[in-house]
Figure (tube, rainbow, N blue to C red):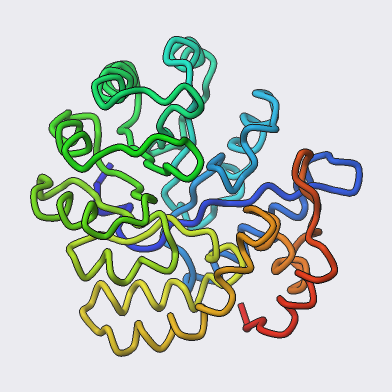
Length: 294
C-alpha cells in the first residue's frame, strides 16, 4: 500500500436507507457510481465514517456494507474502513471478526464521551496501531468527541510505523500548521473540514476526507486536484461555488443535509436512522435554491 493512495479526495460514504430503515444496497451502488463519476470523481472511499452513520449500524450491517463496496469497485479505488470507538479493549476484540481483505487502511476516531488526556490518546492509538492489520489513520474531530488531539500528540503518534496520517477536523489552522511543519514526509495531513481543504493544502496538507464529495464529487475533486497542483485560482473558483452549500450540510446534523442533496439528485432517498430525522422542508427548500450539478 502506497501512502500516496490517500492523497487527494476521499469521500466519507453515506449509508443509504429505505423507508423502513433497512440498508438500501441498490442506492449504495448508485452512490458508488456517482462518487466515482467515471474516473472524474473521488480518489478513494471511506466506509463507516461518521457520515456513514456507523454508530447506529449493527456489526453485521457494517461488514455487509464493507463487503458490498469491495464487490462493487471495478475501478479498484483504495478503501479505508472506519474502526473507532471509546473502548480500547472492545475495539481490539473486534479484530479477529473483521474481514478486511479489500481494505488498504483503517481510520479510527478519537475516543468520545470519556474525554481522555493526551497521554491517554497516545496510549489508545498506540495499542490500536500495534494490533491493526492495516495502516492506521487518526481522526481528530473535537466537535463530536469533546476532546481535541493536540498537534504535539499527533506528531508523537506519527512516529509509529503503522500510523500513516490524520484526518484533522479541529478547524484550527494553527494546529494544522504545526502538524504540517513537523510531520514526517510520508505522514498524511488530511482536512476533515471541507471548507478548510484549500488552506490545509496550502500549509502542506495532502487532501481531504469529505462529506460534500458524496453529492458533488466532480467539482470537489477538481478543487482538490487544482490545489495540489498549486493552481489556487482554479481551486478557489470551485470553492466559491461550493461554499453556499456547506452550512446546509450540517444545519440539521451530518449526514442529513448531504443525503437530502443526493435525494434531490435522484441518487438515494433522504432517510436517516434515529435519533437523526430526515431534512425538514425548510432545509430542503434552502438546498433547492443553491444546488449545483454533481
